[in-house]
Amino acid sequence: MSKLIGPFTQLLTMKGLNLKGSLKDEQLEILSDAGIVSDSEGKIMKIGSFGELSKEAAQNSWTIDRIEKRMVAFPGLVDCHTHLCWGGSRARDYAMRIAGKSYIEIAKQGGGILDTVRSTRAASNEILERSMLDRCAKLLKNGVTTVEVKSGYGLNKDEELRHLKVIQSAGRKTKLDVVSTCLSAHMKPHDFNGTQSEYLKHCAGNILPEVKAQNLSKRVDIFVEESAFSIEEARVYLEAAKKLGFELTLHVDQFTAGSSLLAVELGAKSADHLEASTQKEIEALAKSNTVAVALPGASLGLGCSFTPARKLLDQGATLAIASDWNPGSAPMGDLLTQAAIFGTYQKLSTAETFAALTFRAAKALGLEKTIGSIEEKKQCDLTAFPADDYRQVLYHQGQLRPAQVWKKGEQLHD
Image 1 (tube, rainbow, N blue to C red):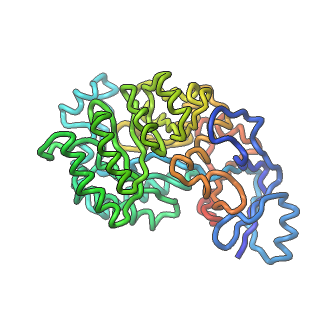
Image 2 (image 1 turned 90 degrees about the horizontal axis):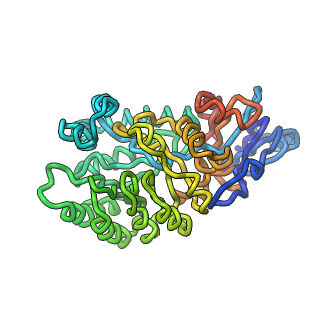
Image 3 (image 1 turned 135 degrees about the horizontal axis):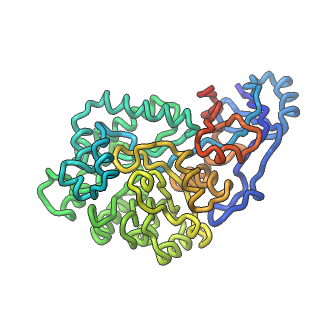
């Protein structure tokens, strides 16, 4: 049965905005006293005056989710880069880092990504799934309705497949839309007897075909960095992944510049991190269809520079913002707070920030035709804040939380 939702004091549709480049708040479509009609499949059927739609509701016996308080509504937020499936904690790493220890020093003392690999391998399916579902519940309460989740803490065939199955299972049990990504190329594990290139060959020849055969993911990621895999090693691996039919996304330019050019060269859906990107990389991304994904949570967690978002937008790139929620470099997991802080430092307009959290983030996942804006025939994914002016949301720097969230027209959080 169809459902009328509203009235919203302000409804920001995020419709009709450019995918690339800078945006001004004056370009936002803001509807007052608005309502949305969701059909039986959870897709948007109509948008308009709540008063007029109320008359249609009475004539057609639609149900009504009536909003009694003043609310500002946006499309459901999209977190397009996370690592939600993990075991253990890296609180020890964090304490060492803020005390001045380097990444290499921490790794030598048993910390780093491989510490999480050990803990995640040791955790049962039930523990991993329960912890991931708890994180998904937090995301929903904070207005996120679609999330990408990577593997990458297994780093061998059995464990990578197991973790992708856990991600898939959790995805069926949460109301969030979950997009899985295979990150078996996170780094070479200690227990692999071979070179970096040999490990990637193992991933391409043994892990990815099984991921495809079992339909566990349609996306492949790799960490391209001095501490992980070189550009040349990554190119061979990613070309093999493309031949198998996988979409590509890359961890690039986090500590050293240049690897984002590989993302552009191979037509990747997104290039993520980019904290070290220079003008050369910024210009290449701006000329491409690859989405530049900023991860301010990692900058806050590591105490390093932010992605040069202002320069990327002014040059004409597509910018998305994601949380990078993981146990090591980005343990906060609070997308809206990170985006608000990031926008302050990078001088992003409200329109640019919310574009980066909605339809531009959807583009990074290849989902821009179904989510990310409030338009007819798209999913009825909404997040509503207790305010009468859309500018209040970022003004409170993440402390103004959603009062209500809808996924496919179903109210999930009140």
